[in-house]
Amino acid sequence: MDETPPLYARIYLLTGQIPTGKVTSYGDVAAIVGGGCDARTVGEALRAMGEHAPEVPWQRIVSQDGTISTRGLEQRRLLEDEGVTFDQRGRVLMIHHRWAGPDAAFAAAHRFGPPPAHDDPPEQLELF
DNA sequence: CAGATGACTCCCA
DNA sequence: CTGGGAGCCATCT
Image (cartoon, chains in turn brown, orange, red):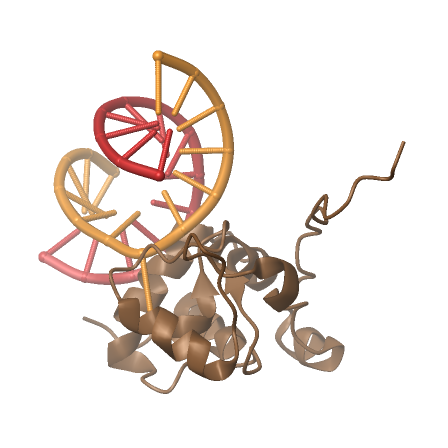
């Protein structure tokens, strides 16, 4: 067990920037943090977070589809308490709560990259 | 250095 | 929707 790895520290730092009521996915965090990490690395960082950064709002990190893969129904409760809404399948409505990324100045200060462009939902097809 | 691990993601049956 | 398998990568032993 070592001190907080540099990459993990960056992940915690970025996670701490997520405002209340917003959520993001493991993959997005990995993309913004960069440094060669991926969604799995983020998950591993958050798993060990309890030892390094107990104050980080880990509940705001969900899977790409908005599902909560962790076994904590507690995560959903925490998010609902922040105003995050879920659909009937128990998935976070990423459409309305997806975080756009850190502040430009903050990102520049820590060399964070831009969040990956995600396709907007087909919320409504142009009437033909 | 090699093997094992994991709060992920994607694809297919 | 559920389940299985592959690809991915940092960190720990």
